[in-house]
Length: 289
Image 1 (cartoon, rainbow, N blue to C red):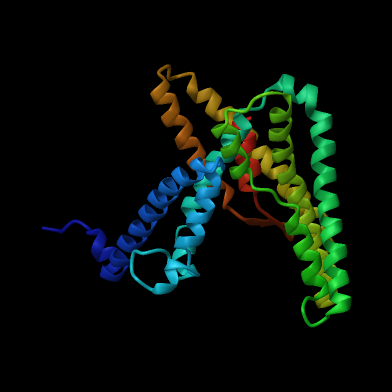
Image 2 (cartoon, rainbow, N blue to C red):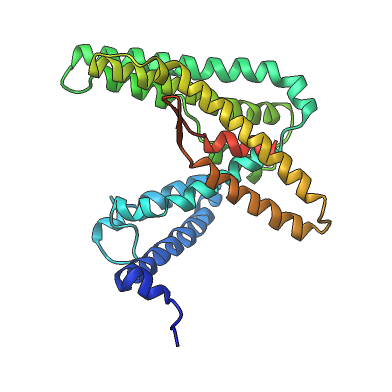
């Protein structure tokens, strides 16, 4: 009689051992962050501060440097192995942010959010570029011009997770909060375009050749594809929800769709020499919207 396939036989004993260690590390991160949040509450600080500090303590440069299995993450390979969890968490956060949008809000604050979102990202990039390029001329051995341009684009990015967590913790609501959520959503699209253009320019300076596709076409294609996929998944979620009426089943359906959306957002393909991909945050925000 044929024996059923065992998980241990499939991934090996070493794989099972590492999975157990990863689960212990993940549990330590969750419990450590929650316990530390009690301390930050006494100091009147947001809970997200505790989670960031807990991550630093349990990371490879603090407790993880002791190389004790299960006590923090010992190296970046362990941290990277849990990337699917972080990507999924970002997907749920982006979906929640998009779900807060209303058509009336977009009509009332859309132009203001676009102006603020574009200006703050572009000005941040330009300021950091100027400062770092100036540092290059003063100390060329410290930083190169391509690196300075790339770091300038990275500086324009914001963390939607921290923003949403602070808003939810303090139950903030009002015109400013709603405008802030719109700006956070727009910033992701602007940051994606800025990074793609800046990285294309940095690559051109480093290699001596410019790729118009990488600088101008591919970023726009990624934004359009992300919004299109998000709209499609949102419509499908809305359509299938009509067959369920209980809150628990609709919640389960939403969770399933977010997981599916996160999985689809990782796909990459090439059409007519153009590298096509999706922005996880944009897709999930559009789905929620």
